[in-house]
Image 1 (cartoon, rainbow, N blue to C red):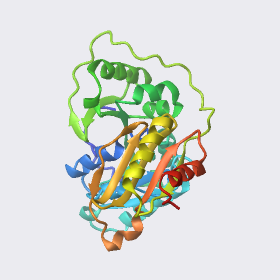
Image 2: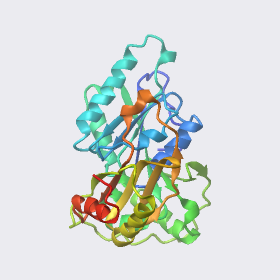
Image 3: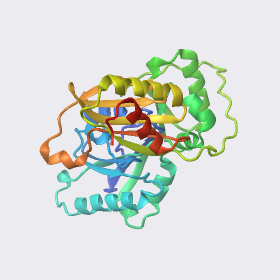
Image 4: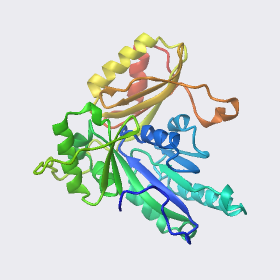
Length: 332
């Protein structure tokens, strides 16, 4: 696929265009999408957000879409697939009831879970007898964390499948890696998916990439199998609003230091004396906290504050709650 503006389609084809946005846990999908919505890159768009955990977080950050549908509690490439098909059929049905073309949505963007295989999602949509008549899968965009991607690709088969399914690869956090590492990553991606367009962004904003130096060697890609420690799964912890934040910060820092290779992603919205705080980590890297706006009362059922989702493997979910209680005694 060539690098083009989303939505370029034959005049005679009136089906909705769908962009699948994938990428590994913490790769910057929501940050990239927020910027695209801010600059109007997708036109009139409805965003479908799929999160592996029961508690949605990303919807709180995507206020510029025409509408948002939340699919929480399972990846839409597998256990959450029926919910995805039903949601897309509902959008198609609502669009077909509009008589004026100007009132119809131009596009759907599906932000997948960081544990999803975009290729399986595209296959599910393209083989559905109803959706195939109403939706065209226009592009699969996969975000790639420049900081962690080489390590992920060395040991995570899912990371490789996501890269291989992409029409466009967007390298994120490129300002945080040295040029040699970035060149090695680009050469490695070219081996995995030589046909993909490769772009870059910093905090969602596009950044031009220089030509790849001739002879740049890719990183070795040894054969990988599914991790013997078991699948990556989400664990939810409810945080008591009266928690001692100094103790919580100490606990989280110690947890990431000890289990950073097992905890792939930590994400949640908690209420603090400073306001609604978005907490995010990718392995051992803690991203700068962000104060979020208050939620309008009519949207109060769309998200659950004071809950943090821990996504990883190699530990028992109950151990996290026990550990936090040991530090603070203030979680349920």
